[in-house]
Image 1 (cartoon, rainbow, N blue to C red):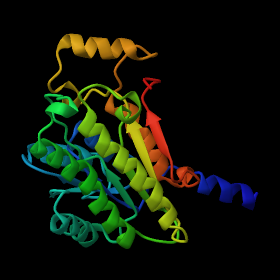
Image 2: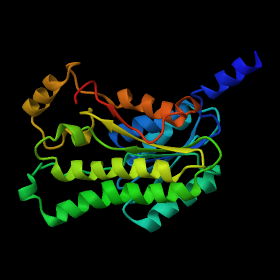
Image 3: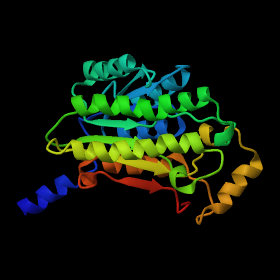
Image 4: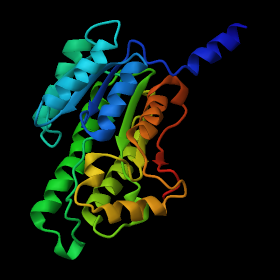
Length: 264
């Protein structure tokens, strides 16, 4: 009986008492992830950039449903800036204590979808600075600051475009390929810490980033490509993050998980 109780505890998806940072936390997927982790009991630090209105609304929603206030705080941080990433982690520790979970959903895309031949140096550097460098800076900080000895989780975000090789996504997919590689290497480098590192690669998902620059026909064509005949939604992705962040997901490590309804 004691062994069974112990096993049940290890398989728990509760995040009660744990601290999670979610970058890009006001984006389509990021906001769903932040809300879901909070619903599992985590204290959530929402990293965002730009207009604070979305962050304020998300905080209001999360904290209104919480029994302990605050359950979430918001911190403006440009993930491509090492000083701001450090400040994000500092603020998280100041508010809630030691950090257990990092989720890196912050990302940008050139929504004109140029071919590689037509991609400017400036756009290439911009996409890499946020998606690849930003993930690196957050992972580096997390590798040095996340709680060791159990429950430490690093969950990065790739994209199914790495596999679909869709035209016009060359720079974006290249950044996500970099994220996949660094995540798998990081997982091995963290041997002995009990910190896991995994990447999630969503497919087409109903977010502002997905719709940007696309016509209704573009969206319909993509929908038809899916075996499940729909575009994914953020809440198709958030529960996978919750699982990987929890004790139940503790045996999953150094993996890239495509969450895309069979799109690729």
